Image 1 (cartoon, helix red, strand yellow):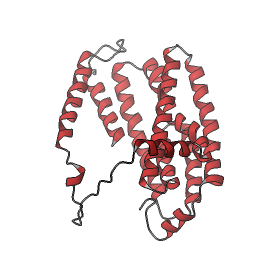
Image 2: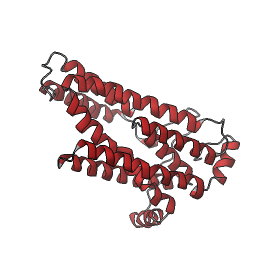
Image 3: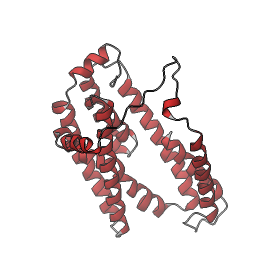
Image 4: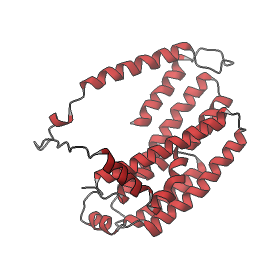
Length: 260
């Protein structure tokens, strides 16, 4: 669903700029007006969301909203999390999962296409992201391979192949799945996700900064290839040596999900 918005955005850019000159690289002002209106409507619709304590499940049970822990205890838990070897080894993978967007949308997309064809390209780019995320997600959640470690190893090798061909959302989908396997509670999973998004955003900021300083497109491509070449083997080490999957395997055999 996240990529669906980007597909719609690409369609809007393509449609609004369809009749512009092919020499115009920047989208028209109308494009940004349409995006602003869409965001405005989305913001207003958020006001219709139901409060968590008023949500009733299909079986009649209400959602229980747990009290948030004190910030000091959360800081301590985050420090302990950052000391875990598997988290340290996954940092390059987390950073890489958004790093490649700079090259794709900077030197490649805006450097080759005009405003109209950029929108057309984005439609298929984000559509492929949806297909890639769905494919790897179906494999990760399938019950054909009962061992979580075996499933994780096969999937990271698949992600490596996909990453070598084209950078897709399969990397992010695998990241979320493997964090769910390592976490033993929803609270722990939220901390893993926090580390992931922090590192991912820092990587994207660094990549865009390098592009802003005028780094050659070829150098940016080499950095992407280098990051992938480093992060994939480290992720394999996490899967093979550091993931404690005994509990997860028992849950998988009994038909339970990763987090109760």
